[in-house]
Image 1 (cartoon, protein in one colour):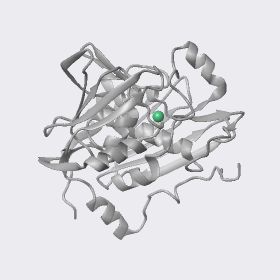
Image 2 (tube, rainbow, N blue to C red):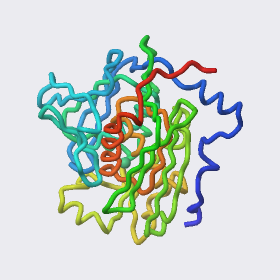
Image 3 (cartoon, rainbow, N blue to C red):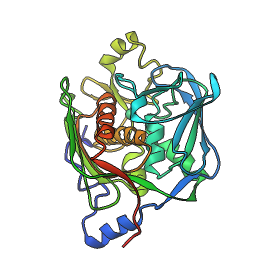
Image 4 (tube, rainbow, N blue to C red):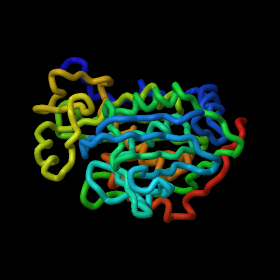
Length: 321
Ligand SMILES: [Zn+2]
């Protein structure tokens, strides 16, 4: 397929280099908390359960953060998300606390965090979030149609003060959190795959709402057709289809689909990473470098980071200089 290349993407992402552009990025950082102007509703099947879910994202008060509830079980029970709630699961994030659980919320959290939304209640009527088209595009569109409102309280960042690194014993996955001068999240994601259409891909970017919308939001989840049957045996992938997954067959993208970016796979890894970082319930002021991340590994790394209490501090975003 001629449109596919394996070049690194640092040149065609939103990375900026000049001092003036850096100041522009820094001054675009939100300094007050935000919430939605009105509820946003998402509806559709979950990629693993195959079950329909209506997910309403509701506006919330200052300092509320991201909390979820299960309308179908106990609507009064609201659980604040954190890395401690993430179970060690394959291929998906599942959060459980106070006797309720939600699954595969990462694309929704990714879109919300990517757009700079701070306070919201996620009301599920089934366990697993709708997968929609496998990316965060529709979620971004709905949030943008509804709009965000600025609240009075200052926005607090989780500022990285010293390097924290973690590798996985069982996989090549590794991650490093580093301090940065600019008050925003920088991410660098790299991956290698034996699947020819993926190969080696890498991406580096400064996370701003604009960069998220342009570079990340529309990258879809992907899966190997050959590994679908073993997945189904483990009760995963029951809702997967060509409508919500980039299907790889014989090492290439299936014939009825085409890539939205030549490096859509690593962009989706970045989308997932941003969704997992949202578990911190505060925007990260620092740089995250990761190789071959999985939800399970990233969740573990975030728990490790939170435990290193001398490695970060919660501080308000500074005024632009
Ligand atoms: Zn994903």
